[in-house]
Length: 142
Image 1 (cartoon, rainbow, N blue to C red):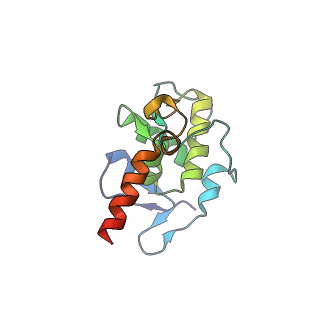
Image 2: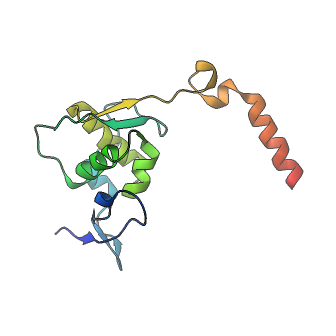
Image 3: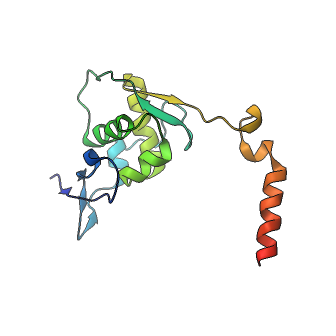
């Protein structure tokens, strides 16, 4: 049985207001991993900061409700991060990564890895001086 909650998301794209599997009084009425078919690992490597955008290609196979909502979220803006999609769908990031990975494989969305200052793979690894400055600032406030 599918339960739809009207207005489950405060702000955002109008298409995301009707969200499956949420009930105003009961909360989530399905386990999040069922949205990804029980899969916990995406086929395409995605970071929380990866930018995802819709390509306009329609998948040839029928999509589940969560896939459709993720695709609408990607189409609502020029580019969104994986973290933003997870926030709009109110699903764990790992589940959203699986959903978006499926959409990448279908050709419906395109993902771009995040770019960090200095061209390295990690902001923290590239700029420890910034992290030290933040730590010093926090220590002064305590």
